[in-house]
Image (cartoon, rainbow, N blue to C red; front, side, top):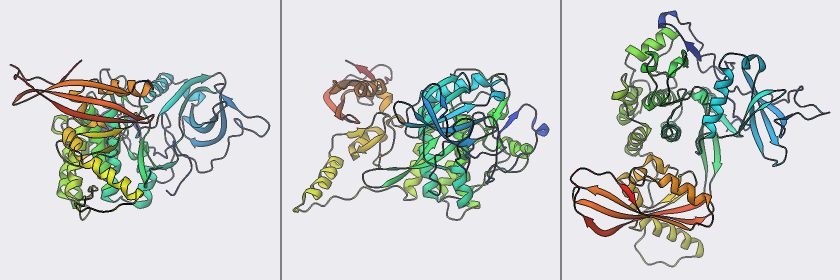
Length: 484
């Protein structure tokens, strides 16, 4: 990373507009990826290079405490509608990013409700690829504030500005992670409505064997519930808005899929499909077909062209139905391009091994086991899985490390999976949960025993085994259901 300071903040352009009129009435916007820019903050963040403490909040003579418990250390973000600070919890000593709405903005009709809604929505998610909100309050002197996990990293738009365009492997990996975050929120009745490079932060985490770049999705200020109604004018960034939203229709998961397609297009090509004035951009979304990425960048595989153009279909019904379907096609395209890691072949010869080699052989034995097995964390992210488990939930063999179980077929026939996982992690005395599930195929109904067993405080083992019972085929097609 070229920038190791906290970057819960974005440097976003003055490209976010409120669309209240027909396209010809809209004003032109600046290039969305200018390096130095300020923008309408609410609810986003603009990173500031100085990292200097703001005198009114933190002086040598007296530390400023917000909400009675957050000690201000320095300002790390600045925008037209608010500021973000690095803070330390007064008692826990943990550091966070704290976002404050400026007083003049708080008086704007609906601003406080939007700020509160963003905090409430973001705090409801627990996902590796989503920046988590941990607290919210109203300070008597500073006003409304929101407390988020503090993430060291680099905003994606800065990275793209520096690199001009990203490698296909890296672009696909980032978009796969963002798609997983979106699938997570869609399952909770939320549409993000503001996917763009400014709202994605790239950080690094260290695993046992290597460093891995992780995408964090930020900013739920424009997010809406699928079951709710749109109030007020359409807001967003013109370069990423789905056609149906321009037409005034309700956003759906397919609207986020469209923005995801724009994101992948931009990372690979170094530009969005349509540029120019707001009117030209919106008419591009509504009327003009995008140029295939392979016509702009040499070496783009036809499978990737098909994926992106599929996501950018003008009609929502012609796109991927949801992000899980988008991920499936992206994984397939990556496999075709040879971008996914292959499992090492296992030697069949008899060998003498050292203790270190024995650990590797144990790992290989786990992968070769015919019983579907996987290791998952509290948020359902897979840390290890064997080939049998991959076939069990995906229908094919592929690496599942880092994948969320929510993006597989498992929750479809194990409806209580999410609840069971939360129960296991919430009750340290509970060692195992078992379910007998009934699934139907052309041969009739089969009973499958699935279980979740504690490995340690941070990991559960998931397994499945078909019972030797075949029930008569039902009169009507039956989805899987849990029986106890």
